Length: 146
Image 1 (tube, rainbow, N blue to C red):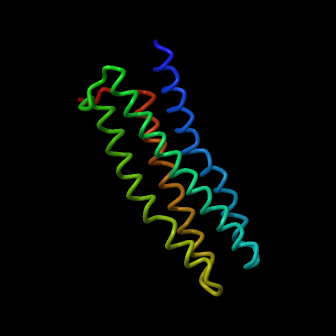
Image 2 (tube, rainbow, N blue to C red; image 1 turned 90 degrees about the horizontal axis):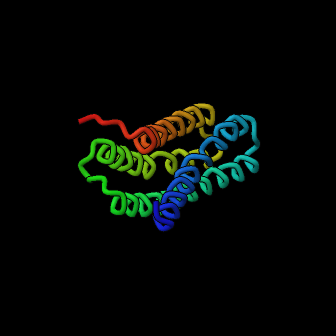
Image 3 (cartoon, one colour; image 1 turned 90 degrees about the vertical axis):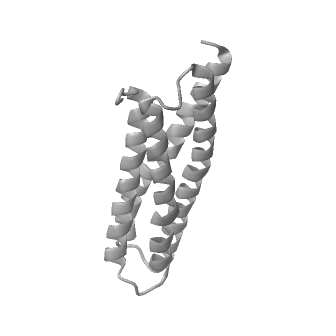
């Protein structure tokens, strides 16, 4: 295994961890949002948005390093685990683009039904985590589906 491949693999694993990790920190944060006053809630929502931003940028590195790994590894783009990873990645990108911002904007409006909105935010957070974990499964296990 060349040093080049090892470095790209390391960057890929690092960016995968950076793409998933911040969301596990947000789980207890949502619980704190239920009882926070509006000023504290605004700060917590800013933290939430920052975590989403970090995940998006880590995703760029994840995709770039993944492409470089496929090109240098000899795997075909039509290999089942590669194709499934790409399909789940596309689904996660579409989901991420629409999942959090509308709910956060509503939460910033004082007087909205906070409990309902936080339930929605929590559900979307877990859906996104599950998408990321599914993608991670395909990358690590490399199942042969076809």
